[in-house]
Length: 163
Image (tube, one colour):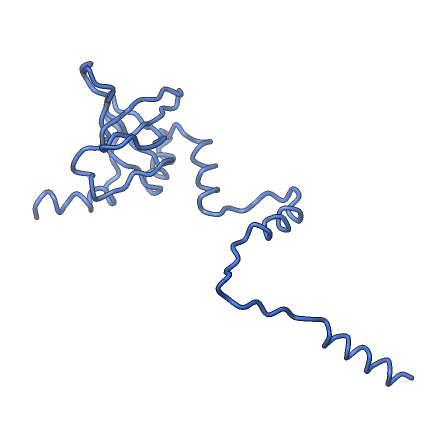
């Protein structure tokens, strides 16, 4: 099997090991031409390049995590490193078990928001009523409104029977 065919299975199955000078980073956004802006745990932001082996195989989204290899020598460009690996939730769980994952708080809050996590119990009744107003309404369907006329007619017939 050629190396090109092995890359997709390597990306998904193998858990990349953190080598010397490599760091975990969170993707803040893309700047175009396979250049991404990332932020380290200490708040430092740099631009990194996505190597050709990842292009058209994996899409790097804002908020995802990657392993960065900083550039060894200073270039005249603003890009100061390369993406070595793109991390998936399975990889992150493995790093948490090993105790080397630096983004404890950020990862847990982002996964709860993206996966539709359970909301807090504080004021949940108010949140539910407000969230109903924000729901998408399909204007291409006829809305059938139920009236209370059926229940009213039953009540009237009950009252007439009592008299």
